[in-house]
Length: 411
Image (cartoon, rainbow, N blue to C red; front, side):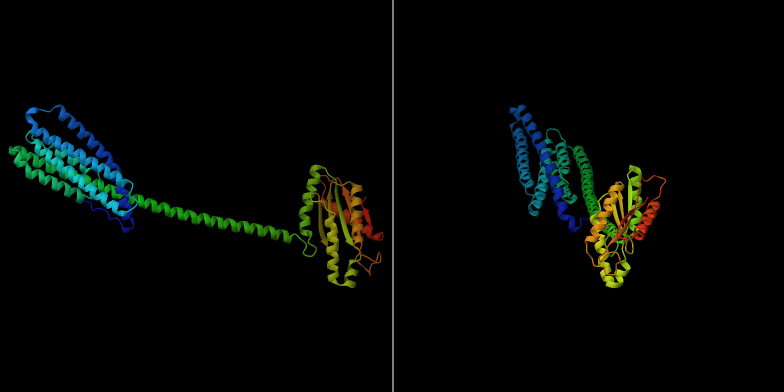
């Protein structure tokens, strides 16, 4: 049983019609050129071998060859015209389909007429079979159209054969061979057409899957971009949170937690590069009395002002300032010798004093002052920064014991 032709869904029908028309058009132009070349050769041979004794037969064959050449050329011109217009209007597709059907009918009928003429000379129907073969496979057309063309031409041949062929044996042979050949050709043409449809549908499936995959890929890329953006935003937020969490909420300078991290980093750098290392512990003199007298809001402003002085004295890469706790601050400097460390500490002390913040409860001065203890050394890899902190704390204790508002460098 023959396989049923696959159905082309409405959404694909226009694409299918255009694709098969373009394929048939290119294929048809090549076939027509071959046919014209063969007919020109046959006409030339006929002229060369022309016999004066058989002018009538010569004229018949010559007329048939010329007719085929003329019709083929006209068909080739029509194909060239349609080739540029198939995309413009669906009507041109129908025009091509009608022209192609008409040409194969003409070709098969032409072969039938030639074969009837050949009966007096050769007694064969080769011309018919060859033409049917060529025109059957010239285009991919619906099997019904191929069948109609073959049926029409075969009926013409079979009806005319008894008038031109007197041998009953040859007639039977022509009928049998012609019928078998035509059935076989029609089956092959149908199979080819079926294969073309299947390839077209497979291609559409591939295109749809490719489009689907592209859309999925685009969606995934967008999701990835959104995810990356969210990750970047989260990373930025975490960094901001880390910065915020490492700063003292009141003064805006690093807090004790951040101090512990940076102190180790600066210490490691000083050990590696063999740079001198200084720690200044700074305490606001009688700050508790200032708070009690002026209130906590004023105390907060005082702490901010002192932190601003410390920040203003800090180098970007080698110094670090942090609030150590309460009214105490820590200033870490890398690369200063003892003399420069003392000068820097004295600068901090004098600039705080220059703020001129009134402090009536102080027994040192009528304004805010600070006491500073300095620890200085060339660190060794076996040393710990805690030792320097302890020495700075002891130096600060001595500065307070000696009367405050002063700088003391540890021994």
